[in-house]
Length: 98
Image (cartoon, rainbow, N blue to C red; front, side):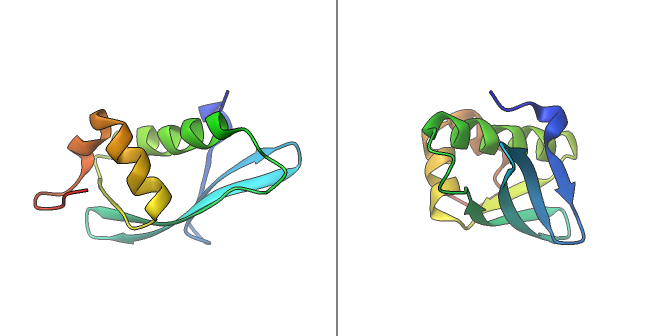
């Protein structure tokens, strides 16, 4: 289970990070106006749990939602996550479809 308290927004490197078993999982992003572009998902090979990936992305979406930002998932893995979890589609900017 991903502990949201352990999720860090490293704004210097422009990535959300979470440390698991001395491994760093991250989602890189680009912030423009009121939109955040999620560009790359990096999960270390040592973390083989598929459920971890879903929980990590969901935790990032929750944190972004608290900031009232729109999300543009440019990473194919994150776009698949949004397609599979309809509740996050409301966070897409007007006119963006996945």
